[in-house]
Image 1 (cartoon, helix red, strand yellow):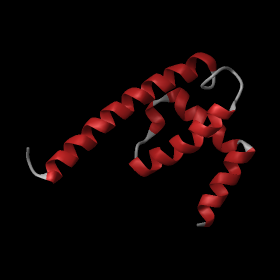
Image 2: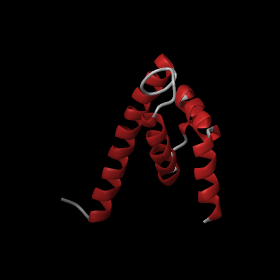
Image 3: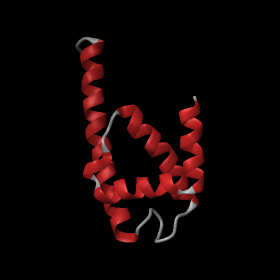
Image 4: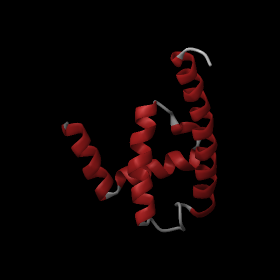
Amino acid sequence: MGAPEARNAKQAETSLVELHKALEVLDARIGEVGNIVHDKWTLVDADVWSVLGWGLQMAKVDPSKYTHLSAWLERGAKRPAGCAQMAAEQAH
């Protein structure tokens, strides 16, 4: 089976490939309608924005190659709740 380190590295590599596939789908969806559900920001957008933004930072994944997703992340950061969340994170 191999050393645990080799298995973990292979799993991390596989997970990143899967993540990028999912980001491509999300980027395309946002490109089609402007947000995840439709053209208006919804609770779904707020929830995904908060988790995805944090997750991309933790995984050190640069979303800039996903044009629509990057713009959507920036729009979320400018919303009042996004500003409050970012301020709270910076305070810690």
